Length: 195
Image 1 (cartoon, rainbow, N blue to C red):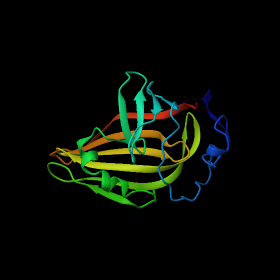
Image 2 (image 1 turned 90 degrees about the vertical axis):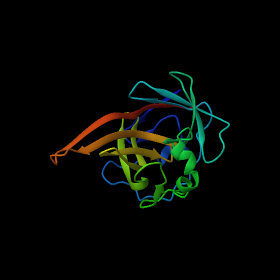
Image 3 (image 1 turned 180 degrees about the vertical axis):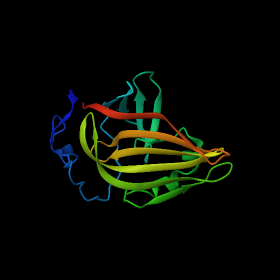
Image 4 (image 1 turned 60 degrees about the vertical axis):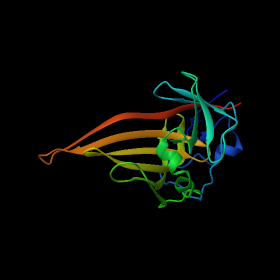
């Protein structure tokens, strides 16, 4: 079953996800959100043509997923941070300190090289994506890289137990003081299929 949100109505996920539908005018107040994993066999499809399926078997605080475009398995925290990343592995306790999610919480991640990565629960807002309007926490990951800085954002929706949107941008200041930026990757949630 494919699930899509239609102007204020959530079809197919029932009462459990009805709270995800939010007014386009005013974002709801942000409740403290605990992290849980989606039901095994839940499939998320994104606008970049990728799809993932939730699996059982990950050790908390991670949730396990299989990439349906290639079969690779990945364990993620909040549908965003991969256990395969050495930085995430080295900072699991720091990342889990963000839970329950609350706007303003920040985690400083130790990393090799200069500087540190920072993850901030930036805000709580209603996001409009192809699957519908959803209330989400915006998780901002900033990290220096060479002469520039990465900013990655995930819109994590507790009611979906996954992110509904992702954007990445890289900004560098040239020797002449000019700021150059690029946005190499982004996707939005297109559909959810529940078992």
